[in-house]
Image (cartoon, rainbow, N blue to C red):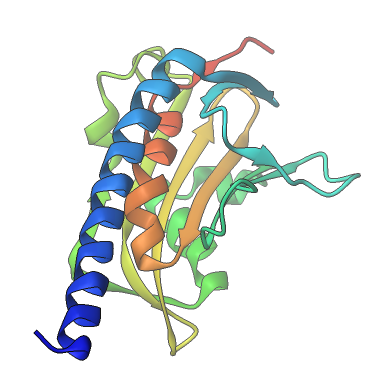
Length: 196
C-alpha cells in the first residue's frame, strides 16, 4: 500500500469516527435537555430551554430576546419577538400575519422540504383549548435573500389575552438546523402560558 492510499484511508477513518462521535453527542444532548432544561420567562410565557443555549440579547431590548450556542461554532440563532398588535393586525388571519413577518427575511422556502402547521394542528394544546392563544408554524430549507441557503423554523403565537403576538424564529445553516431544530421545536411546543 502506498503512502497516498494510507493517508486517504486515515482521512476516511477520521471522518467515520467524527460522525460516530457526533451521533453520540447528539443522543447525550437529548437526555441532557430532558434532565437539565432551564425555565425562562418572557412576557406571559414560560419556556423550558436547553441548558446549553446562551442568552445573547443586547441590553435594553425588552420585547426581544436572542439565544445562541456559545459553546460551539454552530451557525444558529433563535429569537423571540413580542409586540402588541393593532386592532387591524389582530383581526387579520394568523397565517397572513406570519407571511407578513417572514417577508423581512426575504425567504423562498423549498416547497418539497417545508412543513406548514396551521392552527388546527395545535387544537389539543391546552392554551389553545382554553382560547388563550392561536399558533401557526412553518419550517424548512429555504433560500435567503436570493443567495444563501438556510434552515428556517418559525412559530407565530397570537396572544388573545394581551392582544399581542410572539414571533419565534430559528435560523441556521442547513446542517446546523438538523442539530438545534428539534430543540427549538420542543421549546415552542412545551411552553406554558402565564396569567397576566
